[in-house]
Length: 326
Figure: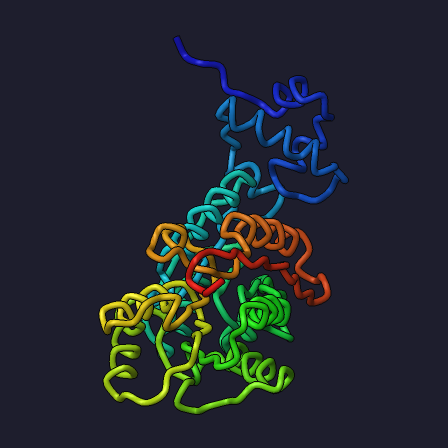
């Protein structure tokens, strides 16, 4: 027996929402003002009933292909980003859109990826970081990261470093170093140095370690730092958890006790950060939360590409664990 196809009318009756409102939510037309509570109820019922919209008909009416492009660097594809991209794909799917995900492995081919993915008939693009090629893109673009000229979603780095330094100073730390990119991403090292100066702490060039965002480079850079010898700081603030975990391992392999001899602070709160030894103190924004905000912002841009440029700043929180002394 052929199962009856679920229709918008069925979902409207079960959700207690008008036909027009259900259509607006499921097709992301933005033509009806629906509360978030009702929109969530409609999506949940549609998912439960396995509602499958007629994309051909929708495309004719709304002039959309229901495809979103996502471009991220492959060397960021660690725990936090793989989890976030999974959630992002799910949230876009819940809103009726498919995802095309592309990765770039160097600065030279990221622009090529933007051009290639733009040729796939996508309705909008979510890109990790601002690059010049995005300004020539004729599609709605949303940047995950810092951008003053394009729509963006970014963590509140100012607040993050305030939280980190407040915590470290309360634990008696005065000699603080940094591990992370000192060339491509200057935002965090600049904020780090600013917080040192603001609190009357010494800035030492030899405690600023330039490192790519990977377990391998985190291990290599910190191992080389230990081999050089010289005075150690009391704690390292790192670009992310991946670097912190790999450097922390090398510190222990080098005979240092963490956190008695040397402390570490990460960023991202990836899944394993609470399970390594010692458990890592870190900044959390939340991969699921980031993904949902990206999906909602992208939907709004697809509906209204002429929306004035807006930066969405996500509030972080400090997760205190065992990698800093008490």
